[in-house]
Each structure stands twice: as structure tokens, then as C-alpha cells.
Image 1 (cartoon, rainbow over the protein chains, first blue to last red):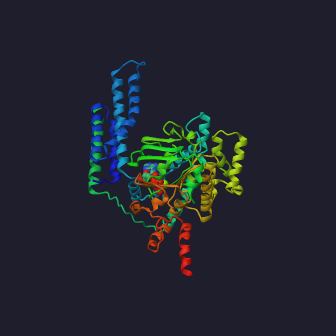
Image 2: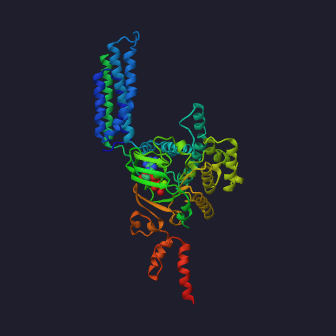
Image 3: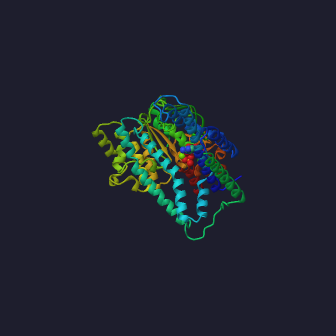
Length: 237
Length: 288
Ligand SMILES: Nc1ncnc2c1ncn2[C@@H]1O[C@H](COP(=O)(O)OP(=O)(O)OP(=O)(O)O)[C@@H](O)[C@H]1O
Ligand SMILES: [Mg+2]
């Protein structure tokens, strides 16, 4: 089942809003379970989920301890039920937000988002620059790794020694990195022009990324749920 | 040309590089090296060939510790690469990258060449002396103050090689040094390789150009899908019938020799010179 990226974004922001207006542990837990359920539903490998959870543990533990050890309105290190509750609440919020964002990020290619942006009549030049910038990040990282390797291979001690020397070693990478980057940009420009970028005002798209009836239904459902919960919350309070 | 003749006087038994049951995978990928066992003696000239993506560069990067085995060990002169810093391994091993642009770091040719020697902690006099020699040897006098990245591809490659050799390494690894070079630069680079061999250094030469391997290597490693599938002299390797299976074609002159074998030409000819030696007497006989 392929959803339109915009539907996914609607879902993500819906989850964001819910995670902020819900303020008891049970409901946030339910929200989190629904997200984990989604992970399995879209068949992203469990390993990826584990990677995200692992990288979050330190931050989660830190946030939890902060709330337990320094409860609001009390002196330090006095154990309070509220502190514990708030700690759990905050950790759940963190997990909900990061995992829903990660799910959208892993299942949506930047090109899909670009197509959507073009659909809402953003000038294609801008959309293209946006995707290009995203796609260049790995290549930039690659260049940086290569330069560090090159330093090491000639006896450079970029990862050892005095802080000042290391700083200088890193600073010396900036020039070649920028020159290589500019050179790449220029090559891309030539490559684009030689393949007739911008020659016609009307451009065809391969992936049309239709906003189907299913997308409408799901988006409206999500919005309804979120708004209903918002109204209920405000009545109860 | 014959490597074994040149090195009969050097100590052939000293092991320069040793791989023991080496497996390697890039993060999350399948294995790019599969159970590599390899011993390279000091003074050997090793040609590494194999199709794109077969693991040549990955293997070479293990020889200087830029990559470390996922399983198994690599030893450079009995230093385990897992336990030695690259900057220490760099005293023994020089590595010329596949793409010179990845390797040029400084803002002038002169600084580029002095980067390595400075890291070795030589004294100033020594460094100056060495840089001068290398610059003269590579004919870079006119380019001394240019920015390395402003040079032509061939000049950049020469600067990259010069800056590695300025460190005086015992083992030199060339990863496709001649792939984008014209004939002049090619001959220049191969002259350098020859000189290194004559000095008794260990040379590792990765290339897709079979005549080069046939002429210069004393031993050839054929890589295929992360494994070393053949490890023999060029003469033996290039007459193997299963080369096609590994997507390798022998040098044109060897193919020609094969086609002419019914005329009494030996199949294991590797160079044009050898062919001439065999064929000229026959032609003369025919003429008279
Ligand atoms: N940085 C990397 N990250 C992930 N995989 C890599 C990386 N570099 C190489 N590989 C993979 O490892 C395998 C071996 O690559 P390697 O670069 O060693 O091949 P090669 O024989 O040098 O090829 P070529 O002749 O094209 O230079 C390939 O399948 C390649 O996709
Ligand atoms: Mg390679």
C-alpha cells in the first residue's frame, strides 16, 4: 500500500499534536503502541527499529532521571510521585515523536516529497535545488572520510595528539572540501544543462504521486480523530 | 623483463604483508573480502586484477590499516594492523589512492609533498633535501607553487605519487595509477614503478590494463567477488582457460599468440618484445 507523502505528513503531525495534548501515561502508551504497530505494518525491518531505540536510550534515561531527581517545585533529590510520572510521560513523548518521524523518513524518499512540492506549484528549480542538496549530503560525508583517510595514510595524526594539533588538522580539510564541493557543483550544473534541464516550461514526471481517494479518506480520518480528542480534552478540563 | 632476476640478490624470504583468514564487510553490507590468506615477500611486485567491485581497493586499504578486518588479521612487517595506528603503519607503507582528488590536501604542490615527511618527524634539513629530490625526480619544478587541485589530471596524479614517495616507504601501493593518463604520463609512472622494484621495494599494482600487469608484475592476484581466485605468475595466470569466467581478458598479444598457435607460436607469450623474438626468425625464413 503506497500512501501519498502528504498523507504520511498528516499522520506525523497528527501524532505530534496528540503527543502534546495527551498527558496521561496510559493514552500516550496506547499512542506509542499504535506507532510500533505501524512499523510492523509497513514492514520496515525490525533491525532498523532497534537501531533507533538503541540510539535513543541514553537520551531517554537522561530525561527520565532529570524529572525524577529534580522534581519541579520541590527541593532536590526528594522523591515525588509527580516527578516519576512526568519522567515516564516525557520519555513516552520522546519515543512517540522520534519513532513517528523516523517511520516517515525511512519510508519516504526525498524525491517523492519533491514531486509533491512541485505539485503544489512550487517552482521546479527550487524543488530541484532542495533535493540536490539532500542528495549531496552523503557525497560530502564521503569526501570528508576520504580526506581524513588520506591524511592518516601519510602519517597525519588527525585522531590523536594535542587538541590544538587536531584542530589544525581538521581546519586544513576545509579548503580541499570546499574546492571539491564547488567542482562537483559545477560538474552537476554542466551535466544538468547537457541533459536539457529547464529547456521547457512544462516538465513531465514519471512518478505522478496522485492524491487518491484512499489518501483523502485516511487524512480526513486522522484529522477527525485528532480534532475529536482535542475537543474532548478541552471539555474535560 | 623478469622480476625474479632483479631480486635474486635481495632477501626474498622476509614477509612484508601477511593476511590470515581475513573477512571484511562494510557496515551492513555483505562480505567484500572472503577468507583471504596471503603472504607477500619483500621485493615482490604484485599485480592485482579483477572486475569492478571485486574487492581490489578494499584489499589494498587493509594493507595500510585504512580498513581493518571484520574477522582475521593483517600483518605489515609483523605489526598487526588492528593494534597499530595508521600513522605508524604509514612509515612502512605508501598508498596512492584510486582518485588523486581524494588525496590532495594542501594548498601548494610543495606543501603537499612535504606533508608526509613532516609527519614522520624528520628534521628540517632532511625534509628540505627530500622534497627537493622528489620535485626534481618528478619534474615538478615549474608547478611547485601551484594549487594541487588546479592541475591537470595527469599532473595531479604525479603530485599524488610524488607526495607518497617522499616518505620513502618500503611498500608502495598503487590503486589504478594509470587509468586516466596519456602515454607520456603512463610511461613516467611505470618508470617510477620499475625504479622502486629495482630498489628492492615491495610494489602492489592494481590495474585494469593487462599489458601492464604482464610486463611488470612478478606475481598476479586475480580477485573475483571478494575472493582471491588465482595467485600465480603472470605467464601462468594469462594462459588459464577459466579467465573468462572471472571476466578477465589476457593482454591482446597473448590472445594473438593463442590464435597463431597452430603456426608454431607458443601460447604463453606476454609482451610484444617476446612476440617479436619468436616471430621475426620465422618471417625471415619465409622471406629467403
Ligand atoms: N564505502 C563503501 N561502503 C559500502 N560498500 C562499499 C564501499 N566501498 C566499496 N564497497 C563495496 O565493496 C565491494 C568491493 O569494492 P572495491 O572498491 O574494493 O572494488 P574494486 O575491485 O576496487 O573495484 P574497481 O575496479 O571499480 O575500483 C563492492 O561491492 C562495493 O560495492
Ligand atoms: Mg578500486
